[in-house]
Length: 117
Image 1 (cartoon, helix red, strand yellow):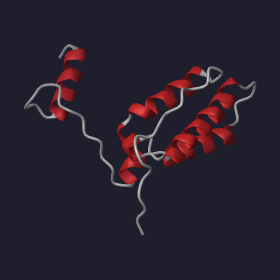
Image 2 (cartoon, one colour; image 1 turned 30 degrees about the vertical axis):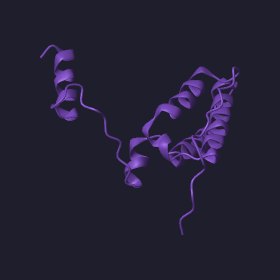
Image 3 (tube, one colour; image 1 turned 45 degrees about the vertical axis):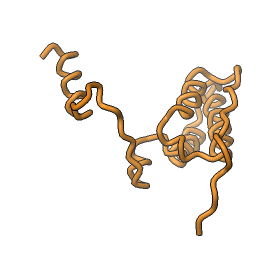
């Protein structure tokens, strides 16, 4: 069964000022990540909740491995890692740096240049 998506563009509320910088960076990165084109308002709400949990764990006096596992699982559900996207057969394509040059070749050339090879 298919259902229509939310009408219009999904809005991204600003991150909370109180969030840990890592949680803020993660949350902000989602709105510009390729998989965000599939997000619905409920996904954005989930991302906000995950960022809050992540922030509390990072800022807490004692790091919770159990909370980290829950946050990591929720991040996977939001397709925030390449492995998660591959499992659902979503591949994000980058534009090549130079027209006519495959992205993989460009990445290898950049890597070699950085190493001075």
